[in-house]
Image (cartoon, rainbow, N blue to C red):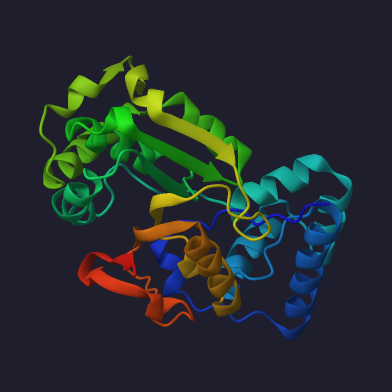
Length: 291
């Protein structure tokens, strides 16, 4: 059995919430996590406990079950319960050009250095439903680098990957995405990149020509290529310190010398064992370069 670790929920409220489960609930949650790992290989044991506890308790209440132990019993014997719980634990909240200043810095400071390379490999680790993947695809297209760029987009959640591959996002979100795009330094009318119906915006198939979507487990799987850029933004804030160290070790082994890693606004690499092996390329935007 291959243990896996779903991508962390992208929910800023998690960091500020204080969850104080009872002693019995702590025991039950430990049993639930061990059951998920032993039975199905899903490994949530290295997650920050407050976020995970809140989601487990919410699922227990939604299912009208009296205890976490009752939820575990259902999860072990009923695939439908498992799928609903996994969906709760891997909630994906993201957007195109999230943190526009990050993408502006990438465009203005990192891209000029990438131009010197004969080919460019970018890894979006924990890509969720793909909003930032398409953001990067558009950016590289506008910078004239699309033809020599391959973007690898990975996630453990198959449903998220399936949604990402479709390149279809709710039409109601396009106004905010357009604002983000312009703030990030976008060079065209954002609407040129998609068509619409009454419900969705469908991004141009030409953007998918350099995209490779694949399932990948940040906890158990090894490096699968050497990359010039790795982006893993707002994921590891939901991992405990040991799991963060493990994942950062994977990224270090996967990054080419002189390559760049981009993290979320609340994340840092400096306190990790490999932190001294990076230079702070743009510390404000959490962009680091492998020495």
